[in-house]
Image (cartoon, rainbow, N blue to C red):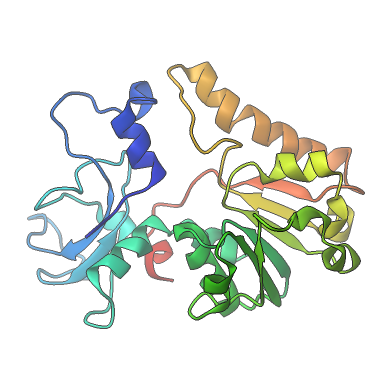
Length: 267
């Protein structure tokens, strides 16, 4: 099975061709997948993987090659998954949602607000955060009923089409320790609303964690355009929130990427 992500759509659209390819046509899209090992390198002597193992793998350098009958994957970003307890589709989502593991490690004992809790990353994150000891999880989605049911099981769910989470009095009285933005644009809404009281300021340990740019759909054909999306705004916000706005806004952190280790796949 293959888990398709916004990045795959971006590659196929050509909006970031200079950086994500493809280098030539025809090509095979997608990178996050699950399947059965049919062949190992001749010089492989680690012994961890065997032919016949069922594995999930995320893409390494570029998201290509997964939507084929056979795919070449990196063993550094691949791990074994349990069958038959897990379906091929579920195993593939492990790969696509693996960045959530990085964020969940930072939520132990925290009151957490999750923007985009109903998506692939968000639903995975809520479960991991709960397992890692998050004290209270509030999910934001247009389908709040799903967020309250297992396995996502948020403590509270907010329908963003009906309520503005940034201005709800109950959260102003008891603010969050951490905001996890998996929906794009939450930082801008936080600043524009002036409702920083729903999350603790940096001086009190408040954190704002995201792995999303401000806009979910973007186009970039030059190094400057890439830096203008992924480097300059996050660096400025991280600096400003740690120096000038420590008493009004939480610390801003943009998660740039994952380590090339297999533990993020199944932890």
